[in-house]
Length: 321
Image (cartoon, rainbow, N blue to C red; front, side):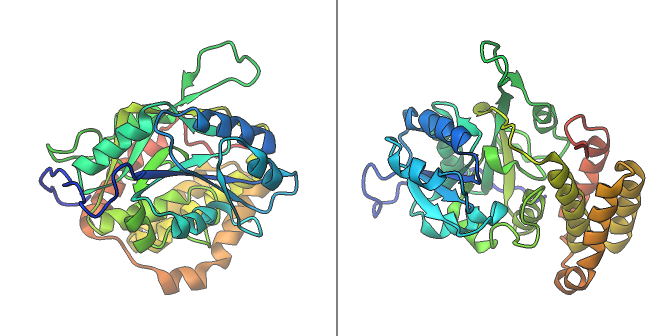
């Protein structure tokens, strides 16, 4: 991971107008109008009153009109097609705030959490991104309290070494639907890869941010709520997850490590047509992967190796569907 850096507090910018919003919430959506409207209702209730930018990934279910009619005042940006995670890249070109709070159409930020993320990022310039704790709501039992997402235990107990000044666990990656990032760093890093589209797309960007000397932070006192949409293609997500893991591995890991990781995946993923297709798609990308390959620095590779053990035993990282 990046070299330790001293704690710093960002000085107020005298050129910034008083009261300017520091963070924009970016929501990407595709044919999930009902879930999106629920999320917009929750975002409109936030005491931070952040500007909200919805990027519609070519929905055909009336999403665009619903956003325009919603009283919360969210701004609508049309991708013109299903751009997947890269819809967030489009949003990043449009916003004028120094931070981006990513949000899925079935997630929303808890009141006060955006302000907490802003305070952390303002106070710690070496931190590129802050990821919140995630709690999951049961759609079928709305009277039940939300439960903690299984991935949270991994974030909370991250084995990565961290400097004394970092106010929480250091992460090797982040979850886009529950993370606030610095807008300028996201733009400089190129955002999410169009080739990966969607499904584990964060890993490549996270490695590039770490390689550039930045830190990723988990913040226990920030919370994002998730009410999983029933309109999700788990099979497609699994296929893309396997493919993108292979692509990331060969794009950024040393060759022998990439070979070992590939062998592990081949042995551990379900033995079915979906996995076969994922490996075939990954193999078809070999020419561009080799052309664009850029191994991370040794310090980042050491961090990635440290995370391999927890990933193999993870309850939250299962290729199912």
